[in-house]
Length: 414
Image (tube, rainbow, N blue to C red):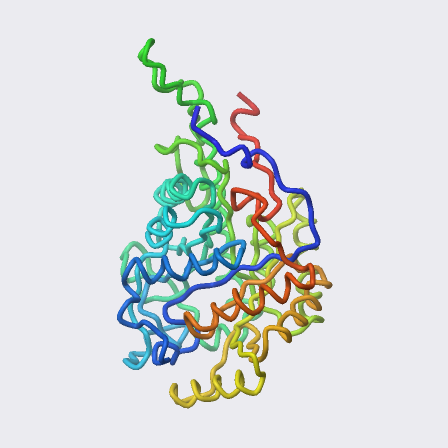
C-alpha cells in the first residue's frame, strides 16, 4: 500500500479563519511590473524564481498558490495576440513549474492552470496525480476553457468560433451563451474523466510482495468506461491513486454558466466581485446552482482581488499611478483592484468574508514586492485579529481547505 501522511485521512477542525491564496503570473499582474527595480525579468524562466516566490508564500502560511498558464502568448486582448513587445511574453508550463517547486516546499498547496479545451484528460490526470505524489498530497488543478481561434490552430483538430470582445461584453446573448455552455459542458465531462481516472486504482492496489512476486492486485484496478458527448475513455490510469485520493479541482467564474460549472464540478471556485454586496449575490447564485445539482459537497469560494500594498495608502496609489504611466494606460482588471495598506485590506477581507466567502485569492500587482507585503504585512495583521492561522494544521491541500480524503468510488462498489 502506498505510504501515506496520516493527515490525509481526516479534515482539520472547522475554524473561523479565512483562507488565503496568491495567484502567480510572470512578474506580477500589472503589465509594467517587470520594469520595477526589484523585479527579476531575467529570471522568469528559471526554477529559482518560482521556488523563491512559492517559498515566500509558504512562509506566510498561505493555503495555496495558483500558477497561470495559456496556449498562446500573453496578450491584453482576450481574443487575439496584441503583438506588443513592451510586456512580458513567453512562459513556462504551469504543471511543470509546480512539479519543480514541490520538493522545495512542504505545506503550501500547488494549483497550476491547465487549459482543458484542446488537451486530453488522460494526460492531465496522470500529470496532476504525479504532482500530488511529488508534493506529498498538496496538488490541485485550475481548469480553464479556451475560446480563441489562434489557440485551436496550434492543435489543428478542430475549428472554433472565437469569443470576440463584443461576445465577451454580452455573454447573455443567446448565440454566445450557447457556445459558452457547450465549452463548459466539455469541461464538465473532462473533470468527470479526471476524477474517475484518479479513482481507477484502489488505495491498496499495489501489493509489492517480493515473496509471491505480486506487485499489483489487478482486481483493484478498474476500467472507468466513460462514454460521453466529448470523450470516450476506457481507463484505468497508469498512475496509482494520488495521495489525496482526489486532488483539488478549481475554476474561475464571472458569469452564470461558469458559476454552474463551479457548483457542479469544482472543489474550489474563484470569483470576481467588486463589493460586499456583489460578493453576497455571487455566493447566493453559486449556492443555488449547487443545490440544483443534488451534489452534497459545497465548493469553497475565494474572491479574487488584485493588490498594490504599501504602509501608506497614498504611496500605494502613487505606485499604481507610476506603473500606469510606464504601461501607457490606466490598468484595468476583471477583479477588484485594491491600492492601500495591509490594514485597510484586512478590513475589506473581513467585511467580504462575512457574506459567505471562504477566502481570497490575491493577485500581486508586482512580484516580489506585493507578495512580500502580503506575507509580511497582511498576514501578521490578520493574525493579530485572530482571523488567520498561526501555523499550518494539516499536511495536505485538502486538509488546509477542510476537506476529508474521499472514498474511492470503485472500491465502494467493488
